[in-house]
Amino acid sequence: MATVLISGLGLIGSSIARMIKQDHRELTIIGSDPDDETAQFLLNHQLIDRRQTFSEAAPLADFIILAGPVSVILEQINVLATLSLKSDVLVTDVGSTKETIMKTANQLIQNDINFIGGHPMAGSDRSGSRFGSSELFNNATYFIVGQTKNNRKLAQFQQLLSKAAIHWQPISSSSHDQLVCELSHLPHVIATTLVNTAVDDLEGEPLGLRAAAGGFKDTTRIAAADPTMWTAIMMNNTDRINQSLTQFQQHLAQFQKALTAHDESTIKQFLKRARTSRKSVDERK
Ligand SMILES: NC(=O)c1ccc[n+]([C@@H]2O[C@H](COP(=O)([O-])OP(=O)(O)OC[C@H]3O[C@@H](n4cnc5c(N)ncnc54)[C@H](O)[C@@H]3O)[C@@H](O)[C@H]2O)c1
Ligand SMILES: O=C(O)C(=O)C[C@]1(C(=O)O)C=C[C@@H](O)C=C1
Image (tube, rainbow, N blue to C red; front, side):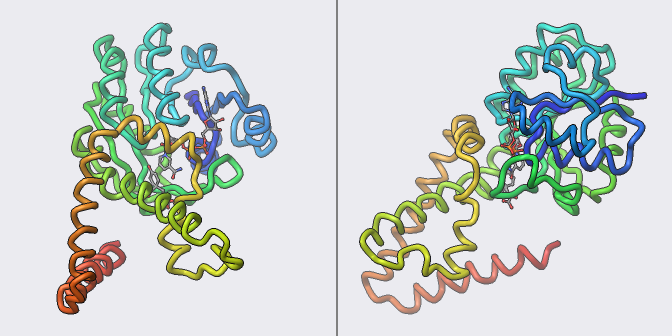
């Protein structure tokens, strides 16, 4: 029977363990995570069969799923390059950026190790195994990057998550990083900036953030996410986020110009355009 190693047992890693255990109890899942409480939680809930260190477990695995922060995924790819892995192992990751990961994984691919980059476009502002769910990827897009030398193995991996009705989406690493820059990384910077701005501007105001209703809460929910995970993302898509911020500042300047000029029709046009596009996001699914 196949052995799956999941390294990183937080929100995403534990959700994958839940999906696999629901449908494929015959598989052995080895979990690897430096956090004792996290590993114990998965053992207690029978979401992993045993805990082992990454270097011990990797040579035993048929599937290796790297689910730590992007910085850890990069380190672990370098470690995998020094280990003797099964010849038909599939190594994949769930990191939110793909270009630096695919560049680093090239050393595995050159050595005939089957590596496919992955990124489920589903998650939460909450981190940790307690918030994982077997439903997390339901109907979500799941990007896959790179060529597999073994289509059957990739199909088997996809089968492990088949409960979730995932939309598998092949994409190049650069298109991926550009797309998620706009749809995830820039929004994250803006949400955190909004919160920091409100905190500074409302200093001394007795009600402060406690008075916030849906508008502030919806636009800033992701600002509550884990800084370690997000710092690693920012460090691995820096140039694109930088460029998007420049464009964002230009849009903001246009709006501010219209506001300063009391240009009612431009302001309304700006709002109308966004409204139409935003409504279409929910209609698409
Ligand atoms: N949170 C999201 O919404 C989301 C969505 C899609 C993809 N991702 C990506 O998934 C990955 C995991 O994110 P998450 O939300 O599950 O984070 P998380 O904080 O919930 O879990 C990360 C886990 O990695 C563990 N870890 C840290 N160092 C490790 C090491 N050296 N070896 C093994 N495990 C280690 C931590 O102890 C923790 O349990 C990240 O790369 C992130 O970019 C996150
Ligand atoms: O918080 C959520 O709802 C998410 O789906 C999180 C989110 C996102 O920015 O959309 C965060 C990082 C990912 O790589 C993918 C998804």
